[in-house]
Length: 239
Image (tube, rainbow, N blue to C red; front, side):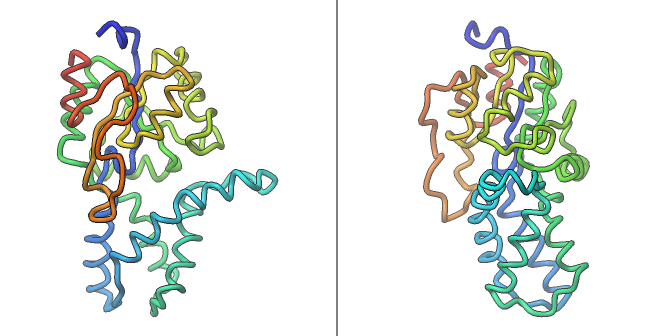
């Protein structure tokens, strides 16, 4: 425990680490599409949507003169392109809004809420996500995520892995970077946090991308904690 004895707060990547975005979106849209009589390959849409996620944030980085754009808006822009690409017909404004806010309605992995509740007894816990504040707040309400506060890229007007997000989280908590632990199922997220002095915890989510998953099956860095789930992190953090 010596390496993490100074930790006072744990911040979490959300998409894929805390919630199962892929399975939930596919199930949500398939049911909704059936009720609306809209026929589409929802699996392909969801996979395509996530595939352009990083590129959409890179556009914000490349054009700072345009100002920061929250993830809801990026999701909507990407969705409109994909709807055209997949020739999905019959969608009105309300439909596009419903699909975009599907990211607000994601459910957690089975261990997420029990593990978070345990960690909350001893540490400050909150998301550190590229999701905007409204998205993360609505998701927490929907999924019963017991956050102490919402830490969003929107607060810093920078998307992970920009340093401003990780250091900004520590600053808002009035903590030093080494007093904050980043928890993620993605090695690249932890690598960025570790470079800035944050402690790190890895949890594998090997079904996040379904059959498309190609990496993050295991820890590939020297992280402070490697656990099978959030309860495992709680065990190692003395909760």
